[in-house]
Length: 128
Ligand SMILES: CCCCCCCCCCCCCCCC(=O)SCCNC(=O)CCNC(=O)[C@H](O)C(C)(C)COP(=O)(O)OP(=O)(O)OC[C@H]1O[C@@H](n2cnc3c(N)ncnc32)[C@H](O)[C@@H]1OP(=O)(O)O
Image 1 (tube, rainbow, N blue to C red):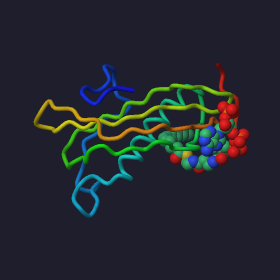
Image 2: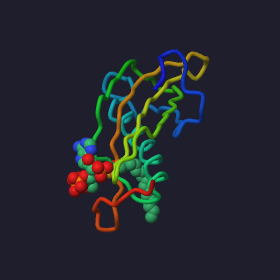
Image 3: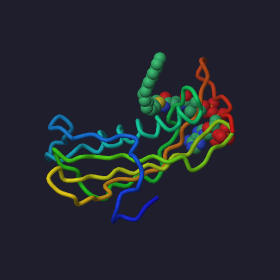
Image 4: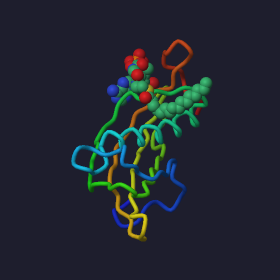
């Protein structure tokens, strides 16, 4: 999506401040918490694009580049890069900013596959 110098020049899907409750036993932010934020960001894009329910089918190429610390501002960017018959591929990256500074760092990235589903939980076609 972007190089690691500057975050994308658009609004993030999610922006949140990390809390002590989000940490792992080492005191840094837990990777699972970050993945959850990324899943929610991708879910927003998938539900909006498919105009209905969409579930996570796969997460590929998950990468953790840098740790995230308590009090950081985390911005999660999500971009639809492919729309199939029922599936959508969404590239997601998360950036941290120290709350007292202007330095931005890309901390994670991954490719999420979401599938649009109907009321029975079966894949449904996404309108083009
Ligand atoms: C009332 C108000 C409510 C408000 C509410 C708000 C909620 C706001 C919460 C935000 C939410 C955040 C987002 C969290 C989202 C979850 O946490 S979802 C929970 C975790 N995910 C699940 O539980 C999904 C479990 N899996 C399944 O249900 C089924 O496997 C699926 C995903 C529906 C697929 O069903 P299937 O019968 O295997 O599908 P199949 O026909 O084989 O393939 C369908 C498509 O998926 C693709 N596909 C399937 N598997 C894969 C794979 N592993 N890799 C790549 N592509 C795949 C196929 O290629 C195909 O693509 P198309 O060619 O149609 O484009």
